[in-house]
Image 1: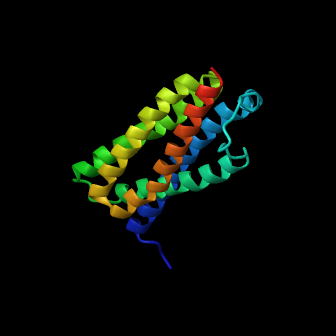
Image 2: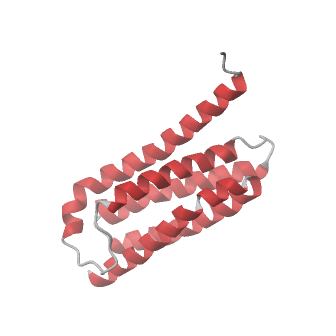
Image 3: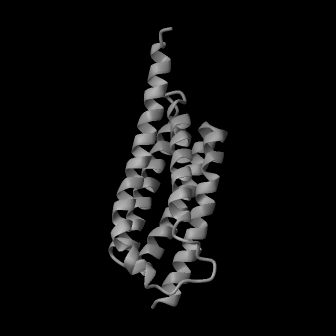
Length: 163
């Protein structure tokens, strides 16, 4: 059974979206892992989850983000909403990595807090742009914005407790 060119292109697009999202995950992880000893020294609020929760949640979220981007990428090429949505997706993905750099690599909860606020704004804009192209794509990003909102509250608490 032969694969139609459009099916191959679609599968290649999904694989590319997964590769881009998990590359961002790998970069963020590379910035984070060497600094977990520093993180362990911080005073934490009672709602801070155990470290083992983070990689599980992020793996699921990055997969959902990739599928979301792929659904928008598959939309008709002439759609301006498609293009702007994917640009915003790239912006928020870059900010996601920047947060790991700011918070973990630079050991700066304050800088991390500033980045995560901008990241939240970029995620909301991405969801709004994606919604114009694919409601499913937008819905796939809702758990992400909820988790980053929780992470922002955690970041704020860490900044407050460790000034």
